Length: 214
Length: 140
Image (cartoon, rainbow over all chains, first blue to last red; front, side, top):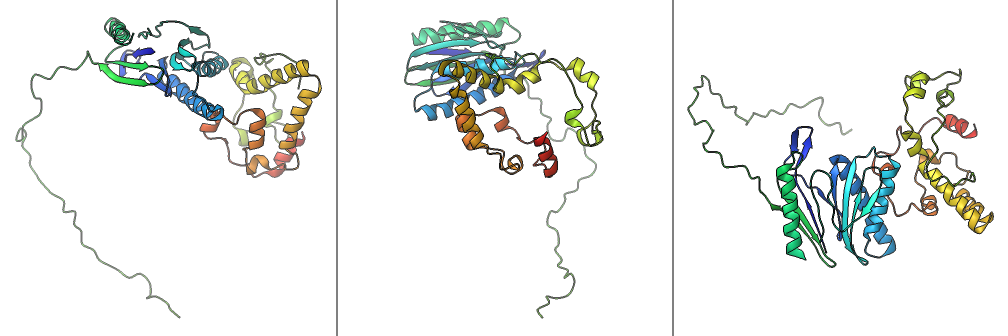
């Protein structure tokens, strides 16, 4: 099987745009893709490839293979000469076994036993050991890198089952505020109070002549 | 079909011409197509647009050339004949009436794939109501 992990921070320059975004994208039931780089590019590219993989699977009548998705992605990214900023880690288990690929924005791919991408970290390898390793690796990225943060997502893909663990670890929960900051009623005085009555009167005015039935 | 094994479209020799936006007076038709500066186009445009526009055509050409060298001259000819049959020249209004040709999609191998063009709005400006213009462009 394969374990994928990702953090959940989306940044816009120095600002955190989304504290809990989903970086593990769905390609097919047995294939998932982690995306680093420009969020819009990764989301759109993975959505397009997911649709094409489904059509392809219906056309061939077989469960889709990871290399098919990899080929579709690399050919598309090469065509755009790197202007699509999507660095992807594609992983899945198909009829030929578990596979893990990285795809860089210009279209080059690598096949590796374990790999990291972006400023976060993703890995593959026994299940709980692998999950613990992935969580430790992503946590290292979350705490030591400004571009990663918030929570850890993980996805465990095996030959017959895919398990998506959203927010499997949340090491950055905001502390409860020490005081309540709401204003009690009566803090400020008011000079005028008017309640608008929403029930309005109705008046029917016939327009023109009565119905002409000649 | 040119006999070429190119996988990637060639970097186009940059040329800009008024011909594609000219009106009957021979000059760029600003009222219809908007402002245009040939000098700016030649200097600033990158190869990406040309590459993306010619991608499918170049790949298809490579496939046909490989088939010509593998199976003989008849192979690409038959395929091109089938495509021509399917986009019969008897109907010059197909672009206006229905831009999707299922038979052509099957022959070109696009019947089980989606492109961004299928997802986003297809036609930039609805069906052109000027049939004379369409016929003139086709005959040019």
